[in-house]
Length: 468
Image (cartoon, rainbow, N blue to C red; front, side, top):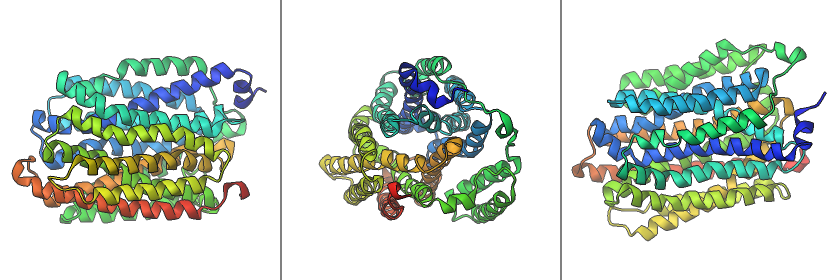
């Protein structure tokens, strides 16, 4: 029987067109995300949203993405990655078009949740498809190009989002990418082989109890942490911690668990790659949110001007990611990735000194260090992780890596939301709140520096991939 690896090896053209489909989708979703963050002040003004509700716009997307990511990865290993991937891209198209009906901040948050659910299906399978298509060679390069597509999306997002917000309106940052998503759907239908299992493996079952526990746990932790100073939020957060303990215990007993924690603990390279990814993305995600507010409110820049500056970080990430991925095919990934973590920390250290009248050169210096650091980290980290698991578990490995990414995003965003809740409260951001806003931004950046130092330790301590 022809395996997926043999199929793509005999059809190199199909291999690269399959990669193109993945790259388009993983470009569009981050592009939409970063566009929305640039549009936040315009959205807040149009929908009369207070600071706390504005901070939920990125957080709602994260919540939707995380709760489906593990079940999606497990289901993809059972019934086929192509099917789950197509449902994800199709759901992204539908949810993006629904923004045309939005007339309140609550409706917009619902759209963001739906976008997150769809992106969870896409990112829960994308890297696994790439790792399968390029299993015999060029895997690091292909993963690097996939990462580059993510960073190009982040790169173009602020620029495109700023222009669209100024000239067409904030809704266009949602529906604008839809035509390109149809191209991704067409390419995957034509060039990605259906990889549904047969035989005894097809009798695996989805762990519904574990999936429900996981969804409840994520919901409780995010909501509880976002307002931890309030008694009811604190209670919900404690419930989330108890659900986490229950989830781990249930997974250790389940016949078909979402996560085999015992196996995960035995794979040092994979488990520490996950930890490094969690802390790096914990540092990275709030940057766009915080700097978008800083440059538009405190520096008085327009959305397009702010987008052009933030472009610096993402552009460097996009340039360096494929080069770092290629290097990790030849040299130890942990050395490249750890260097990236330390440079990323230096970027936070520089940005922590920004003030209301700081020169933009200080912001640019910090963004350069952040871009170079993250560009060196992501592809080598993913290459090391995906190379340390069996081929029949690539989907769940992909889902776990993306879960680490989005969980880091969610955790750090919840901390920022807590800072906003404490310092600004349920008020629209006006000039009299600018000192408190600057304090939130600075504290968030200092905390981010701490996250990335932890990432550097986990990255370095994973050991040498080629000796495992």
